[in-house]
Length: 92
Image 1 (cartoon, rainbow, N blue to C red):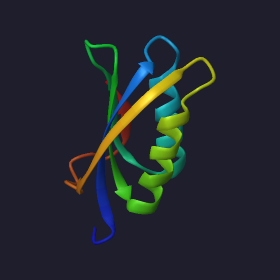
Image 2: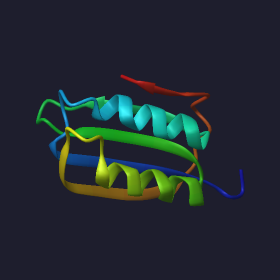
Image 3: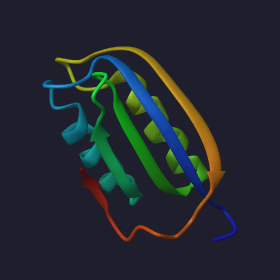
Image 4: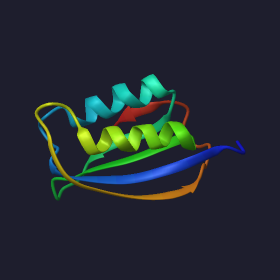
């Protein structure tokens, strides 16, 4: 777990009802990451992902783009040490 990290991100804009979480799930799975994506009441999407820092940085780039129907206006994020609490990536 030495090179493992945790990315906590929040995406704002038109990110609900446009398959954004499914897009994040697909990208996270392709990178072998664990964690989750969930809608927030304020219309944003929270993402918590764990894995190698380089792969998390690739996911972060994808979060800024989103699927074609999305309009991502802002992605805020923080880095933490990996907890190891997740064994797959899911939509919550």
